[in-house]
Length: 214
Length: 214
Image (cartoon, rainbow over all chains, first blue to last red; front, side, top):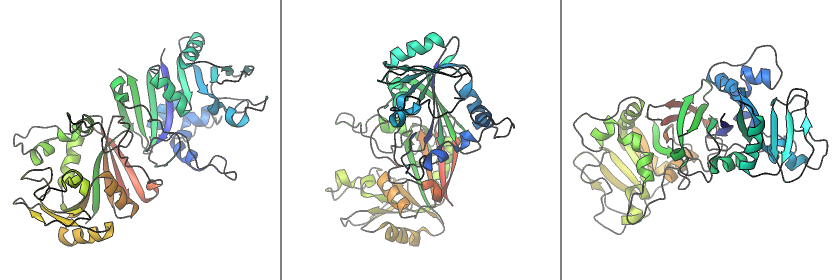
């Protein structure tokens, strides 16, 4: 059992984007940031439900496949679930429609109680007010032999890193300079003292950096 | 003839360090940032004058050797030459002693006139008040068939990037999170639109990113 995080970041370390407008509610940067990941065979099959078997292979695909392996529970922030925009809507079920790609219990960190939401595919969202350590204890209790993933956003991953609770972090670094947003590195000076860093470069130009706790 | 820049940066993009103290005037971060580079055979021979032939080989050495190839002139900021600390000293000749490792004309950008300094090994420091374009014209005029290197610091490299004057930038990204200093990425949103990015990972863990103008 390990505690893992995976993020897509730009060269300048941004994992959130700020170019959204009312006319273009996702902005262009997010698509550019995750382009290599969403092109993989695993993402297309697992997230888009594309059964054609199409999609890229190679290193990006290896990391995408590993992304979904052996995860027994997930923890995410309120923002990643959409509560900052949709917290007032009692029927809000997240961004993922009727087939959220998690297939495991997901603990959403929030200060506002909400009833759990269960999907037929095994995804169950639980809403908890908890410290990182408390949330991790809940997730570990239901993860079985699986890993616990700290899904995001960036601020949540940084909180768990600072609390020393993450065993392995994978950053897919896209060759883009985004310039603003929320940066993975802030407040993490000396991270390399606690984690060994390994880099691999994919055919797409994305560098996959894996931080493994020493 | 190309205009080139080479910098050593941390994962979070810092190419200057801020942990200097009166007791430790270089700080620890700088040494960690350039550790792989200063271990190479080329650096030891070319900068330290070590004729033993010792030093690392592999990708770090390939980039170190390329660093010194075909440079016909260099441009650097006043800070890199040491004028921020030593500008009041008429005899200041830079940090490099009697054998500066440049061996070519070097144009130091400063608002204060100083006489040129010539060394037996071909290094000549000229002090010029000039825009990036004006400085580049001076350097190009004396570089012959060689490249012009924009040596640093980070602010000077960014000025030349923003002016569209750099053909190729090589960043040696060390697996460190430094947390503060001067960041290469600031103000360069969209750099990937003008430059193709290629990454290679060295045995040391350093990722070499090369930006080539499209």
